[in-house]
Length: 632
Image 1 (cartoon, rainbow, N blue to C red):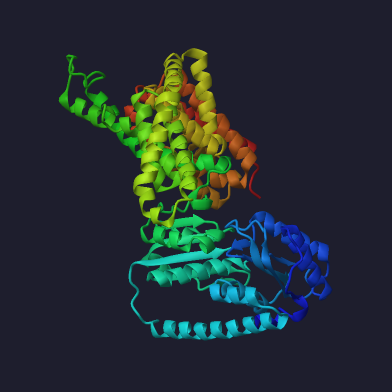
Image 2: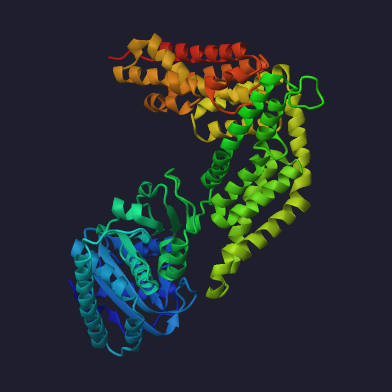
């Protein structure tokens, strides 16, 4: 099907009378209605405006393509309008729009219709084609220009397909850049972004392949071999696309409009691998890799910092704990029990330049890089280092990381107005210099002093906990570990425990680990003692929870919580809270933040600690076993 099968003389306006965006939409919609292409003009306009709310369809270069796919369309059609003087359509480049193609796709539009509409979007990427349309003086001339361009495009497509066939047996090589484009309707922007990237890649001599996620489905899909050979992948999309396949690859995630407006910048970033390695967590990032909008984004940034800091905490904590085997003060050269091996272990794990000293800078650096990609890492590390040196502690590191990340995001927006010639020096000069300077000054003169005071107060409070207060804290932390079993509340309690370790208070994290071990252990006991309450598959899964619980992997309880959430979660919270409270009541301290039963020898009261975990697990087991109904 040709474009001119959808664009007719009665849907062309050679001289638009409108002077505003709303007026253009009204005028083009009215033209379609008069040509009997619509079932309901008002419903169609509402669908057009809903698409505009997602992002403007004024794509720049003098073009606007308002479009909608709705049951208000009787017959798929295109309405063309031209304004020589130009109209402010809130275009991405801020310039007036001259050419307007309103695309009306019916709810049940067939593949031919949708592919034809998509082809129009691709043709508009040709500057000469746009210029000829602007110069057209009659409706017939407009149709003639489009017909001629379609014929040229068909010829180019045939030549390209022939090239692909002749090179189909070629051996794939490393160095390819891939892309995926997608917009909400999958009609216009999807294909315009794909064509803009493809044309620029050809101009730059880059081996390139793009997958389009359009209304007619996925075209030119990326294969496992393509992905394995790729240096980087550009995902220019305003809707969900399959991302887990890119796990372990450098992925740039931006809106689809960036594929149209910034193809060279994106391809340079991909070629230089100027983007983090994607981890298949299911938490997609928004523009320029930023997912800072909303609470889930902040949580993701925090977890990025914590997860990258964790190896330093675990390794450093266990090495410091091992030094205690030689004596509590064996690492101190001034004490009679001094042992050089104990001092070496302590220095590596927690000395002035050891693993523990790096906790705060690493935390801040990876929070910042989660927010602002690679340019945020150095300012975040420096901000975290300044916080550590000022004794602002874990809290200071959190603030430094978020501060540095958002400072660099602001710098990106400010420097985006610089000429293209400055692109190369932004990541190596402008972002690090100004990012470190601004972050450092704010940390030194604004943040460090008050946060240090808060940190000292928190440390004194933790170290002064005793009696009822300590038991209550243990009860809350243990219960939080079981509420969502690996979710935000679980991670919040775990992060608090890490902050306590960093403040040299080892009791709270012992309660955290006890609470985290109880849900899977309690479920394992329940499936053993109350077999009639569980299916055969659940009993088999329950047995594996002995190992998961013993290893401090709370997530082992999730399948059971998903199947019977109220009973399982409530039973788990009661047992975990009990274990946390008992751990604090027994004055148990744990210098290692992870490891389950494998680090119990490092606690000060191992038998009391195991007793607290066992009691909590049995409470969960019997609460769940008695409460749960028998299997039919």
